[in-house]
Image (cartoon, rainbow, N blue to C red; front, side, top):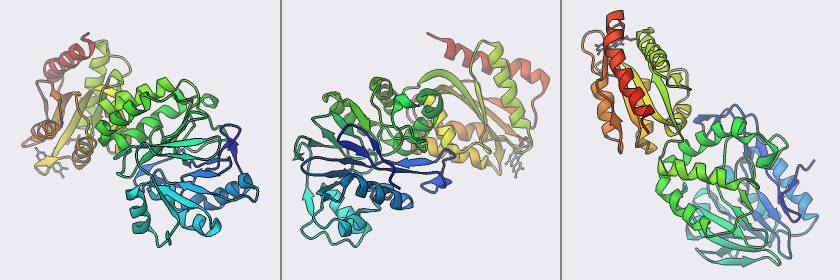
Length: 403
Ligand SMILES: Cc1cc2nc3c(=O)[nH]c(=O)nc-3n(C[C@H](O)[C@H](O)[C@H](O)COP(=O)(O)O)c2cc1C
């Protein structure tokens, strides 16, 4: 049976959720599932805003058929060509023979690269500032290149002031019946996944997100309609501010996350002693992560949230512990910048992980490494705890508590 929600009287959410997929992009764990949103506008002309992933195709097609009530689908607007949103283009071309595919030059090129669909006479090319009248509704197209693919567009519907935002303002997490942000406890239950989604998928493209936020600031928006997760119809500023912070790479909080790698527990012990001493020094809400058992996407999200990081790594065959190397590579790839970092290195015969972590951080923008690096030779000793750990903790605490 169809499973549809009204976004407004004449705009319908016709998407669906997948709770079976373990890894989004075959990479990111999604224990809360994911929704693929698509929206259908009913007017003199009907327009569908993007399609969905093939995993939810049956539900999606039933939803569309229900809303159309036997009527025709006139336009399919393709705001984003990532396959989790465009898998059903070919099927819709077959089912709705008068449907035109609306996209920019890059969109159409990508459709042809991904699929064998016959688009002859079936495309409507649009560019920045173009409009598409549907009757009472009019769509305005806003390009959003590299948020996070080059063809990405957003569409602004002028009558109801809806902004269809493609992947921007999306989040991991299946929709559990509740569609709107004010129907769920977003800050408690969704924000960590929204942060993890943004930082890992769009995080690299902060400058491009800033450009789009500036364009959006000129629009009167009643709802943000993303391709994943809840539709925003209240308190939009709160979420837009999060995006603003994330895309400027400003920490959300003055907070410390301690991230350690450890084979036999000695580096872990040094990290835990440091965290405990930080608490004694007045730092609150410290988070400690074992980087072997925490997915790197969570660590990236924390690196965006927190102002301060403590990275602790054993030396491993003259190099970094592989999980730490992977974390630092990801931080660089996703443009993490402007953080203050304390370092703990461990080695039994020639500790080198401090030097290597420092070099990796120097390859990122505006990272401050606190001195001195705490060097552990195999295991932390009590006398070292009262000297070196104490010095490092004082430095971190002073930096966090400053201002
Ligand atoms: C496979 C392997 C490679 C290592 N390579 C180095 C090394 O190149 N230099 C060094 O000083 N210690 C090296 N070590 C020793 C560890 O860095 C050291 O024992 C450290 O205390 C391990 O910390 P952990 O107890 O947190 O795992 C190596 C240990 C292992 C198991």
